[in-house]
Image (cartoon, rainbow, N blue to C red):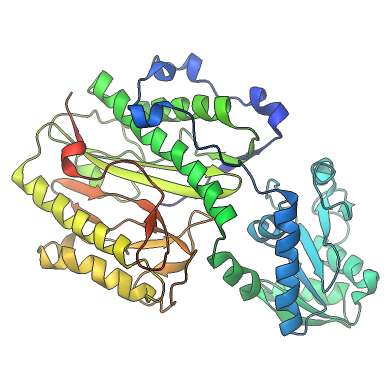
Length: 435
């Protein structure tokens, strides 16, 4: 679900030991000693933790091919996710403006706040200019475009993204004779389709994501009447220990504050984005464990719904409707399908079960460098799906008088049906926790 508020840690492999993960000091006890299921007890798949410089060089070349079709002399990227997507330059996005210049030929250049300059020196993009800090004596957007103009683009045709009126005013002050073209869709649409290198980053991240679900489950089973914060802390500590031990490079790894994820139970599980409470888990409750993992910049998510103790017939009915919608969504995330039709076919099962009034959201959303990104598996999105697109599949059923159930898988669009990256079980018989 929503990833707002995530913070990122950008460090090289050499600094992995310095990450401030504190599971060994957990006040909730022994989270680093949790025993996980056999299929999760080993190491993560031996796949990369991040994309290599050559991948980004190829991506720049692909962008330049698209620029040629649009007769653009340069593209200036201002969104952090798009700077990362094209250059691999991981940075902490703040109020300080930062831009990547992609010329129609040759290597990109970066325009950055000075406090980021040491990071640039560690990576393949060597051409950069830095300003001292923000806001400074000259508007920093103007500063960036003055320097772009001075590089031979004073009268060029330049594509930019998100040219708001206030931003355009400063751009025109910096490069008054340039022709500024809105080109935000160029990179956004390239990001829709992930190649196998990107999918493998997500596949490796998914192992850790599944691991966090099991860690949360094991903590509940071991400790019984726990609070949501205790579940969050336990799972996050276990995940931090696992990632710190196994990651080869610590880049683009994010942990949600305060402890990560959503873990509502009881009637509050009917709140899709419930913030933690001080309630304590009890028998009969529905419990949703909702976690994300970000590795190499790419987000994945796994959400699973559990029942504490023997499920009632009513709980089974809700669960069956949710699972039918979920499974249908996965089956239809295939090449040539229309996004809104996938949504309709999935949610139809919940309608037919008589639970239409318990629907609160769409079937899914795009996922990649951002936890929520286009396209959307939702009414109104007429995008025709292509192989390599990646989505969450997460239809839910929410009865405010009982609770909610929702699974979320991260799914790759393939030729005949979606490929689920998650390995965690989904059937009700596997989702019962005895406390």
